[in-house]
Length: 391
Image (cartoon, rainbow, N blue to C red; front, side, top):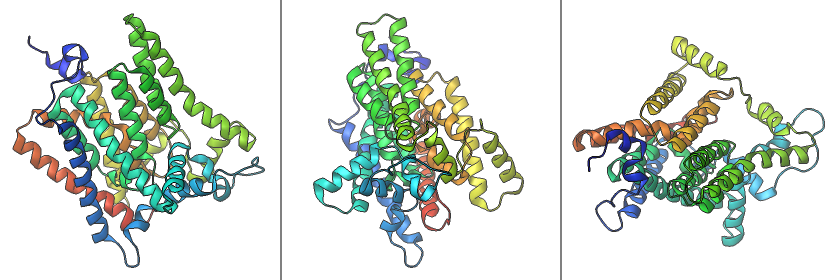
């Protein structure tokens, strides 16, 4: 039976059943882990090459917000109500969701590694898990070739360096890819646990919860067996972000404490993209250096690819998740050189190029991926070694 191309692109071919396994009994493990290991090692070499005098690879991998995660893991969250103006130095730890620092604390207690090394161990293990889960999701939706390309695009993208750092992105993507994979397999308990894990790891976990709600609505509309399990999964995930924000509010003494801390410490407020739009226009007109211009171009590319994704009939939960992440990143003000890092978990913006390269000749796809990978891995290495500002 012929399969319509739109079905392939939306992940609905053959009734959304798994595609035939690729060559090799262990390809589901070897391919993603090979991509993970190859990109991480090459980027470590680039970081070591670009290191300024007196710096170490470890210090760069634990720079900027890594210090906050380590601090929360080691000392816990600040106690007592906020009195007067927010003090970012004292209260900033409350801005960071608990999933990642809790795991860092657990690894430290289990292995007696110092907290910095424990943070890196958690990030690298989570990134390896994310590679397997993302590849499995991509193969289920589009087949082995596109899944391989998608995994390369993810691990070699600009600012994928954060997946090797003491940051929560790698753990978050592992939860996201796992939750979406569980949804596609209709494994609702797994989707609930992983969706809740994502929601307790980063504020953009709310996007995963909405994606699960979209899947639940589809199941209810089609009256499929076990459809009420989707409602439970979506409900569990939807509780995560509000629960942590409420906990911070209760601990700090006012319901909007988390938002106040974000604004005071990082200048982050939601302005519906006005700040991002002004930044892009200013950067293109009179950009102060190539980094500012490159960030503007990366934001434009992400928006364009998201529009293309909408036209390609991407699987709805993945599409909704990615669009919400993009809207949250572009829609907020703050440090604009951090936005490429915040876009790393968006995923859906990588699907259109993965599909296009999947149809290209193998030689062409390999050359494009090689060039993209070298630039992306170098870009991230540069941003945590030579670039002087936070990512």
